[in-house]
Image (cartoon, rainbow, N blue to C red; front, side, top):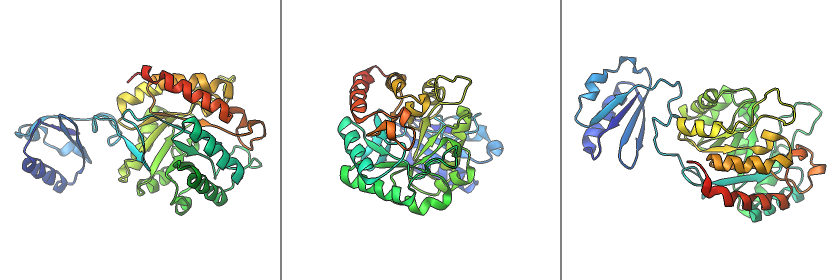
Length: 334
């Protein structure tokens, strides 16, 4: 349920209303826009007397929300959320490219790629330290050593770092990580999501291989229900019967999510297609569709990458693509 207040209301009356609602057992989500304040009620609202609240002088109208996700719902928070990651903003008109290798392999590789993507226009550095792989014999990442190398790359470039977590027990290792990524396989690892809700780290939440947009938003709700509103949603492709691409990149997710939620939305064309040659077209399409950012895999030697080299751009290709993205940004749908 949401309560929409009239413009230029008395602050004392607002305080009295919110105190009464809190004492009635509701968790409140208050959003102050340019012209209207919205109070979102989280809890069992079936016992709320809508007529009583509607009759209050400061209340414009009361509206029940049918969708199961509340905190992530745009009806709770009309304005786009802007997330600040160490001075790098994303959402609400702030566009960012997150770039780097699929996995951290060694010091020379991650630092050289970090320097290259920064020159090319990236605002954040991605790199996997813990790698979930289908085969138990594939490269699983450098783990703690990989995190240390990411921190070295950050020190060398100033780029905030984005890396994936596998389980809640690893959280102490992520203290110096700027953005914690929840991969597609963990999108519905609810115990992990609840633990991340207790942190104040920015969480980049990827859509699962076969999950609906509502399920993605409900996973975001798990994090936000714990008090952590710093969530970025990521469309990274879903599994279909198509075999010419690794996944099917669902770009319709961008305008649909834009309507449903206030959270920033980024697109991963690297995992979405699985082929470097298709990444530029889908990256530009995602930009024009209105995404708040992109995640692009970049490797200094893709043919010899230990993970996902087939979908990785070279630094030169990334720099050229970043210029093309900047050129199409004025045409983005918002």
